[in-house]
Length: 564
Image (cartoon, rainbow, N blue to C red; front, side, top):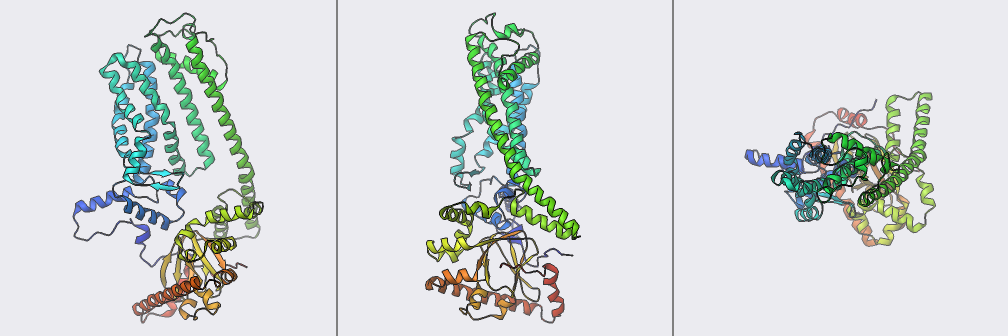
């Protein structure tokens, strides 16, 4: 049975906050400020973090970047941001339906509780406005998170600030100036423009519940449809009341024919149901419903509703067809392969641990959507293949100095020959028996062990290993017993790029300057490993070597990957 990786090193740089450690004599006030800063930084517990960042090291790097650029702003993938999105999702729903229904019930003489609900939501809206000036945002075009205070403030002022401020003050308009209730109603209808905010907050809920993109899209469509129908129902319900303030309603108006005239004692909820029936008939139909429309201004309003409904339903139909086709093509193939895999494991009587690990590999490799990558790439031109490879390897190219020391044309040829490898937790990636490969960590974390089971250190995104063995194998570097004794074990699910010895020999050796830098760096890393092993030997002097040698066997598998 496989045992988990039990780390013997300090993982403060990964598990704890990126904030500097405080002195034991630090005051409670400074400790409190530090705890507040922790909840403002990016968190692994925010579901949006897992969707954007693939490893814990990348999360830690993002936290360090956030602290470097600003110490007062809130990261959009922090814990506080997650709780704010959940609260605001509930707030937007309550405000949307309460404020609009309050407009239909206001004409009644009896008191209703809608205004009190709106007053109860005012503190939440006020806090939301203040926090929005300090909460970062994800820039889709630049593919990065903006946390600079000035950029955040400008983005909010140019975005939803005027809308949020209008919603915050609109309950006071009708309370202080009752004659201006019509304008208060118009301000209430501005909540319609917050539908994208509702969809964004809804994404957090679907990620927390671990639902797929298809479920999120369907949930967003249902939510948007209900809000649109409700919005138009309230609009045509309040329009006759607004119109009677300027001229008398004609007897040919559809509200007169429906028996719900304005300024009457008819129940407001009954008026709303009649308007809801009318909107559903025209928005989803379209048809005129039970009552025909004859007045010119009403005809214009219903033409807008019909056109909006037609375009929206066309969009929904296209989106649903696209989702169904993608699910059938890739999702069903993936499920079919998993079914075959399950049947194969059952026939071969494989242990549950192996079956789970194989399924975990398929889930990580294909993201529950099966596709033939080699077949797809083979249909593309060589230039497009290179662009895709460069995009997928962009983080490695930015963080690994080995590529930065080579010419762009050489890097392009090397990238085209790199192979992708996914390893599961506790798998042995490399030992002294596999000296012909250099590994680049795209995402994940790898632990380095000695033959005695000593854990030297962890390496993460952007790091690489195996170059010392390749250089020694090519007689470019003196062979080291220390390097031969090292083994590399995956701590988490890790994605690697593999460079063969032949690729290194063909492309890198022809550039003496870059090769000289690689050899010098390899010598330095070899000396650092020797120093770490020497310190460990001093600490464990007198301890039985048999006890230490069992550690690697307990923590990693005995299988070595064959890349040929």
